[in-house]
Amino acid sequence: MALFSDDFEDDSIDAGWTQDTGTGGGFVEERGYLKISSSSGGLWSTFDPAWLYQASISGDFDVVVRVIVNYDDFDAQWEGCGLIAAVDTSNNVRVMCQAGGGGVLDYQIRRQETVAGGSNEGASVDPRRNNFFLRLARSGSTFTAYYSINGSSWTALADPGSTLSSSANVDLGIFAIHPGGSQIEARFTEFTKFADFSFPSESLTEDSFDDASLDKAWFVEGQDGGGISETGGVLEIASSVNDIYTSSYQPYGVFQFEDGDFDYTVKLDHQGYITANYEKAGLLVELDRVNYVFVYLGYEGSLKVTGRHTIDNAVYVDDDPWSSGNVIYLRISRSGSDFAIYYSVDGIEWTELSPTNKLTTNAKVKVLLVASHFYTATPYTVKFDDFQIFTIGEDEAEIVKRSSMFLVFPQFTIQ
Ligand SMILES: [Ca+2]
Ligand SMILES: [Ca+2]
Ligand SMILES: [Ca+2]
Image 1 (cartoon, protein in one colour):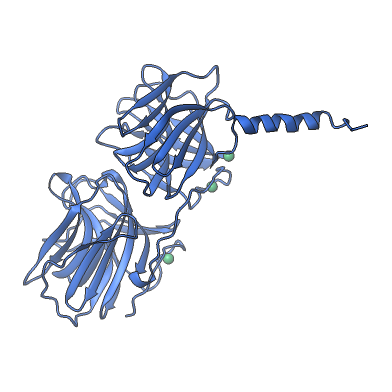
Image 2 (cartoon, helix red, strand yellow):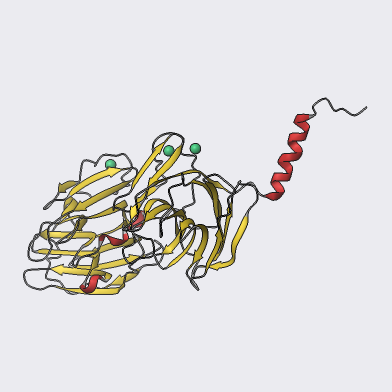
């Protein structure tokens, strides 16, 4: 069978893929990605992963897949996802991101063979990074695995040893595996021959949340107890259990990727619900889980707007800046590795909370709208609206006022 690429863009799994749900798995193609869930199964003593594959691929190949996972899906040993090439259930090779001992994630190439096998493990995955690329290349009986965090530079993992016949056809596909604990979900946004692969630049898309369905630009973040609903002209986010700064990091929300500069604002209506300690909702920019810039409305003894980042874990707080109302505007701008955090109570005059935020690199980031509550707190729903490029500042506000005066006095003419 001839190998084909798939961008998973049409909401149904294309003919040519064979579906094997393993034990308790499933596949959904939606909004530009393939989601594989696995609630059981194994790859070692048993072979029953949830995997989607192209059957009986002959000859050499070199394929890439982009992987997006939730941070805390990999909470039990041997959970993983990636690319797999299998002659049969006991002769296969895969490149994967997997949770090993102690839940530490790493990238690795593994073989499972009746005669020989083994693994080469690469550097640990940044365990908080949830966006990476895996690549598997075959040259005869030799397989080489690669991983990348940006789609441009690739780190190779050498074949740990092979007994595979150089002429054997393989079933080649994408898998998720979950031997124990809670279910995992892995999302794959494209499966591409490496020769055809070019990584698109990604930039944020504005959204006024007015058409009652979540636009494709957004990915959904989180899995525990939260919810997303675009309704009534806004995006409602129901908070998820867990504080953003605990080890069980599961804010609920939506995100886009961005690899360039930006200056974006969002309007947040907390509806008076953020009233218990550790409840927080806001605009979060992450390089990864420990490198982020965050501006949020949170409750810590009282309602505060907080700017926070991780270089020195500095926190810049303004207490209750509102005279009334539940609406606040949040804004983060980026120039390379420099970030600035602002808030506004009217969307016109802005207060900068920290002038010198930096992330350690100017790599691709996630931009998230999130809400979370702590274990003992009551779930709540906030409304986000008008996620857009920052355009209104104090100078522009002056222009708006002058324009309005012309409208107020249209009868004025030069004599
Ligand atoms: Ca499809
Ligand atoms: Ca929409
Ligand atoms: Ca709207």
